[in-house]
Length: 191
Image 1 (tube, rainbow, N blue to C red):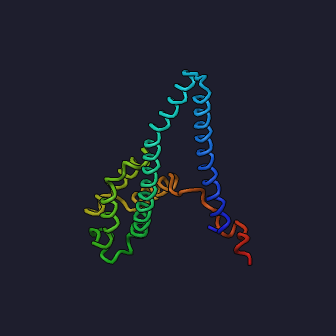
Image 2: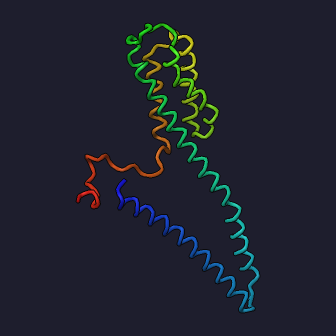
């Protein structure tokens, strides 16, 4: 990401924070003005207090959801890495040193073990992603023990489908920039 894009993103975040602070300050000033004028409209004051209480109550829920989404993004990245490392194994099973029907070696099974370690966190994923990951993991686990049970082309299709589904999720923290060959260079990179 170029410097201009990073600064623009930072500027929008700062503007959003300033807007929230300005609205809060204006509401506080209005509340002080109402109380200071001694012509207190208690119904309006109760409405403002209720609204403020709702915002305070929703803040932890919003923060927890943002944390969960961040964890889900990290989980997707780890799962994509391990699933992508399995593709060559199932794309060309005849090129294995021990033969296509032999049980997976320890090195070949490492990505499956890594996925097994990540499965307890799968509740962070969306329901469709979770279901597909569960189906894929069950087949991978069986394949690790006995490769003859599932044809490699079916397993490759299942791994590819899972990779595609995980890539459709909230994998990135923002919009992805276009590929370098499709985007003009930033002004700070031209010189």
